[in-house]
Image (cartoon, rainbow, N blue to C red; front, side, top):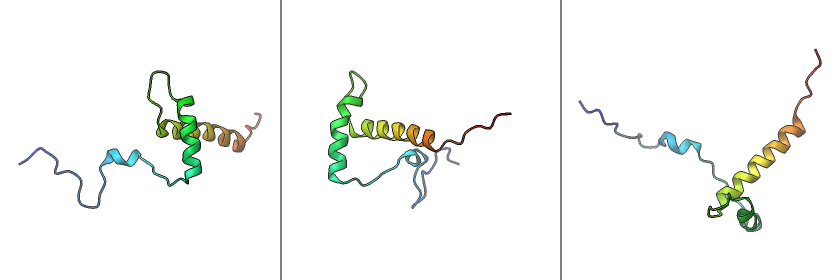
Length: 75
């Protein structure tokens, strides 16, 4: 009896890839992300589109959550 997993079955993705999201962006949006990448990358790291996309998502999420947050009712 083997203790090594046979891996994912055909048509199934491994669990590690479930944390990825992809999107198609137009050339103008990609150019804007490329311009932002060096500004939002941590010092000493290579700027990348993924860093710029993450910064946009987190900033946008914060803005949207505060925009649509329900006011707390006073007790």
